[in-house]
Length: 346
Image (cartoon, rainbow, N blue to C red):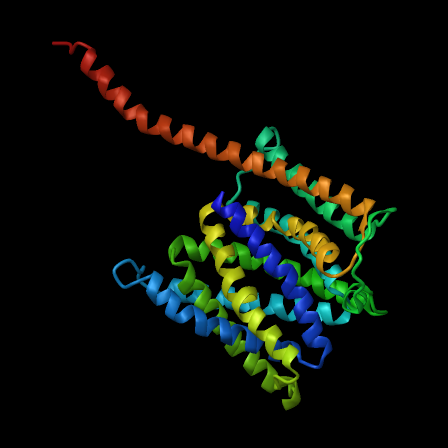
């Protein structure tokens, strides 16, 4: 259950990150200054931790292919964040949470193309993974787009919630940017899986990932000519949002995600994005004064059904692979026994 708990915690951090980033960007920070500070702080945290957890005795050797992999996941992650935060600034955290549920579908397709997921349309395992992915995405979209009658009201009244949930007039442009973000995020998850297969040291990989983010965001900010005021950490809520983003949004969340990618594969990680919309609904009810509606209840149930379907398919797939591997290992032994029992012809 460690991977499940880790991904739920990572998705909770991701949902809160969207809310925090919306507040900071709305207060005047540019997308690039936000990314620069967040990933610079994450890099400072991950550098000593990666050296502690991956000491020289168990640190895999670096080579040219691995370094190229670092650059690729850093670039893909940077593009995903730029499009994502731009989309949030044009729209809302709610729309961002909804459209990021395209990630499981995109990741599933890419994983099949890259042969990370086996597919056989006549197989019950493949059908479970495919149908579960579609159902989870549909349930997540339902939570956001269908409200229905109110089931539970909250005594809290929050002006912050209205600012975050309300969709501005240019939400269509924001939606386009967020859809591109989902595409790059899926590519980044697949690239992480390739890199971690060659270099299974999660913290070093994520340190390189955040460090490349920092360099790219700093250079881009200079090129586009961001005003110096966008780099100011005043008022205090900017500083607090950067601290949260660097510690939990980048260092913690991305490291846990990479760890789960290595242990369970890219589709397992991607399937937790629809769970994020359920988490955001409960956060809204408990902390932001949002109501709980019938659409949220029905959509959450649908997400859970789809999520369970995919996880069931993945579990069955692991068993099939284990049985096949055991049979392959036993085959030479049985052949040797048969040869010993068979009398030799003279």
